[in-house]
Length: 599
Image (cartoon, helix red, strand yellow):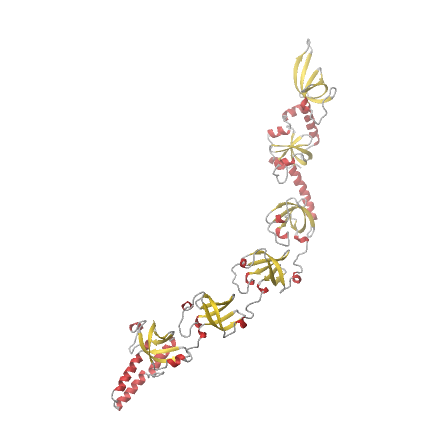
């Protein structure tokens, strides 16, 4: 059946038709074929052969001439006496002796052949027929195909995918489908593409009925894309996805196949409704993951090649189609790695340990650091508790400093372990980054990979004997005001040692603001109220220094009367004594406050 829609898409200009018919006006051809009286085809006999023309006797006392050029090189040259079919093109009236009529006729052998050829074609060819011919030449808009007469093959109808140069078809024998026959103009338009599509549709239906999953089929690579390859199976294209081309890693399908290459593939899936076929190439060989646990048991050491490096790790090829991931955390026991490229590069051959296998997901976890000894395994032997070690301050935080003892092994020096006596709010008051220091190992936890260090532990704790023996309750000492708070004043007694002078112990009268009494930097005398070795606190009093002076003056005066002596003893009890424990009133005022704020 003729595809009328396809015919409408093919536009043929008069110039293209004239070129297709050898320069002969189609209307003249029609006239010559239909009006026998005019432009009649007749049989003639060659009388003689001249230099440029041949004289032919067509009867009726008439002679005609045919250009010698109308005999092609492939034909036998004209000879006198031969019979030839010619077309009468023009008559010229001529008179001989007397009234004898003689006519000179212009004849054409070539046009006569074309007309008879067209008449034969009209008798045997109809729209929708398949014709075979040789592509003779390329003209504007398409090709000429000789099927006995020249027919027009538009460029858009040469193939399913339009060739880059249709001139490549010149000289080739092609089969085409007759799209259009214009009898009035004696022209034919054909399509090779329509015939190919028709044949493909028939083959496609047959092929879809035959295809089954698991079959092996041969096909030709028709197109290559980034995601895969389209393979012509003989009437229908199937998609060979890049992931189904190789068990190994490939970057582009062109690494394995090329255009027009014939390959054998495996049918993976057939969707007959959507006419889609999934193909596989790697499935022709067994999957390397089948017995992966036997070839690479967990814990075994194997060698591989680094094929890709990502931010989170490196992929190592163990064999074709088998790759494992070395996570960045599995590259070193000690080094702090920001990117895997600091350890490995693409193309490096490395030794790894198999850490785990997920056969379903086709994943293998690998480790590089496991090929080396873990420095934390025997860390207790190298850094026993109580030993003195050297290290470099690598980092300082609010709560302490990290000291590098060796590459990858750090210890934490907490801020509370910097000094026995000084109140240090930030480690930077004592340490600097990059400083080399000595510390004492306080504890080791190899499972959590932690080592606790101490700086103050290098010396004896002064609160054990030194401070309690030097500073005793009732003792009057000099100190310097180091800090003033809303609850009292800190007084430095010696380097790193401070005592608390509570606001209630500044003066006999009530004090709302300690700065009204003392200033930072003032040197003052204070009286030791108590020394708490466990809490590491010293309680001080300023007003009791004045009381002591008063008592000294009172001791120098005459003895009071018995009655007055009893009153003085009562007053003394209310004020509190000079020892480590005051009277009931003082204990109530100072004890609780010191417990809240001293230190």
